[in-house]
Length: 285
Image (cartoon, rainbow, N blue to C red; front, side, top):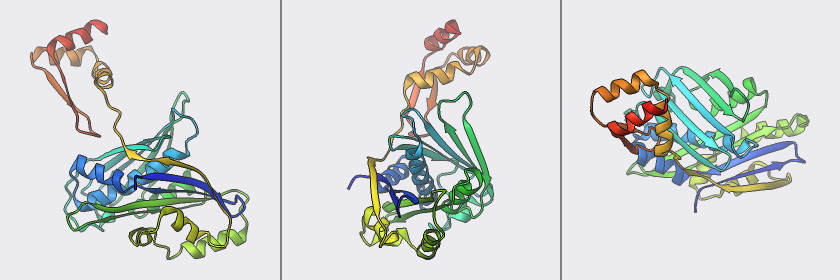
């Protein structure tokens, strides 16, 4: 089954939820960046958090970026998502050799920044310290501290023996401001030892897993959209980035009298610019 996101309401609209199946999305990231198992796990979790948070944005052109700068051997991760279920990302060190489950050790202490470009003059930036470096708990902490939304985030990736991605999925559950104490207590109790990853591995769909959480409560799935690892880079975009370097930088590239190669961080596509093209950029400055 292709990857997708569901979003909806439950318990008399006291709770909203997002859930995703993202096995192919995370596998494409693994192949693109040739990640080690622990990095696949870390990047996969952040990609899923990002793609669900992208689905929370309201306008078609909104973009959301999550950046983690950290002291662990992975050094840093960055993920960008839009409202259409498209997500992309990269890591500073893709080949960290630690056991697949040691995400916290690979990430270690650090800072998470959430940047929302929602059409205003300046993007909104929320920043929090990592509290567990497991990523799901860090996003939970971000929602509570930066957006004042009580939330529960679960993100899980499992791997096959050949290190390809077996399952990847997760959810974000958020309380509405008028949620009753009884609903809050029910959720806390049910989520205490809840393993989204285990149920996904057992073959349950994301709808069935959400159904288990809200058993005996009403659930309305309001939207379903596909999700995928998509890089929207192009020669035109890279050209704009090169031009933005400024006259001095471009002139020094021309002096070398060699074509320059620019590689996209997200998909590793190579873009070559000849000396003549660089001269044209100078004329346009």
